[in-house]
Amino acid sequence: MKITTKSNAFVKARIVKGLSQRDLAKRSGLSPSYISLLERSVKSVGPATAKRLSELLDQPLEVLFDIE
Image (cartoon, rainbow, N blue to C red; front, side):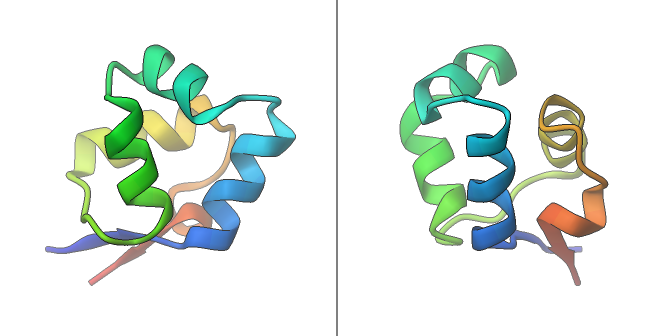
């Protein structure tokens, strides 16, 4: 299974929540550089991390991520 970020939806959700990449990184336990890679769809993400990010951003998993 490969999970990639829907860049525009992910960035929009983060901005709507009023979070910087650094803020989201702190809350999720990830590094700011990893958040940046996710926002550019450079890196895929694991199921547990995708779930945690979708919960932090108050968005359904399928809105923020493509699951193949």
